[in-house]
Image (cartoon, rainbow, N blue to C red; front, top):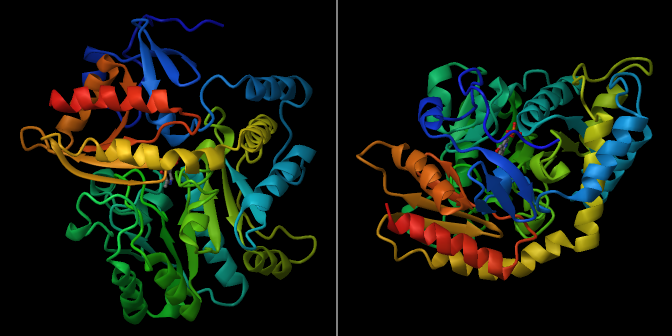
Length: 439
Ligand SMILES: Cc1ncc(COP(=O)(O)O)c(C=O)c1O
């Protein structure tokens, strides 16, 4: 089916996380994608500097994934997700367990990053309850964190502009300070200072009592807010405090997972193994909605063994958990990652990518630059003193210039597909420089 390049009406579709009035007055429609490029409705080529929304790690239009999805649609379009299984679900979980760190060997499937986060929070509460610690229901999140848009994730997240319109979320959530310190200004890589910020968790333990805290959730490297790598020693300290007080540590790896850091997971990059990892995005190369939560042996065994042998141990799941089509896309994506060594490729490309990031630091509108692995964040000076206004303008300018970049407020995020080559980086950064110089 070819994509209709000019819809009959822009009115009815309410676009997510979009300034609908601005968009509809000057639309940016994408009508095709192949390799490192999109095609716009004007027929222009747009180089992908953001892997879509951090998800298209293996590049666009991968025929292997399309074939796997097509075959699955014909042979097993759907199987009930509850009380029944299909073989490929077990195979994808096994393949993921192979690459997951530590003993995170049990995988629960969801349909998105948001659902993965809410699932992990529910598992944390259920696990503590199953072992007789039902008072552990509080969560500790962090300022500037992004954990999706459902009520659990929104509550533990810390980007104010996303939260304010919805006010109350889960009760009993506290937020540690974010890790962006002034002395990290314009430094690429893991900051040397700031490990002591993890002691905020100890402060909440002292205030609320460890017996009331279920879990601490962080992105190992904060992604959406503008790329903050953890200070050296910070995640280690969180791990230590969690261990001392029986608190579960959850890493939200929806962006970090699958090679973005130059390692399989952020947990590997920073050498700290959490109790749960949430994933999505590059799990299926972004082409079929899917998320997953990996849990330690202790969590899985604790919950499964607490139930009678005929009983459901976790009253949670989605109609489309591990749907055949999503699993097929996941398995085909795993094959591509392995065959093409995408994680190793990301590690190899990282120095060149980070030096391209640093190369933008002379531009007047650039306030700060950060980067780690194949993810970079740039803070841009706000337009007319209105936070977020420049971000919307830059999205339009990038589209016109022919480069796809993700803006969160006035933070500009660069995260090319992991198949990007030097010439692609060159094109992405040349175009981005031109856009930044025009601001
Ligand atoms: C760390 C993190 N968690 C959760 C999510 C939410 O994922 P989704 O948009 O698939 O619900 C995102 C999305 O960017 C994310 O970056």
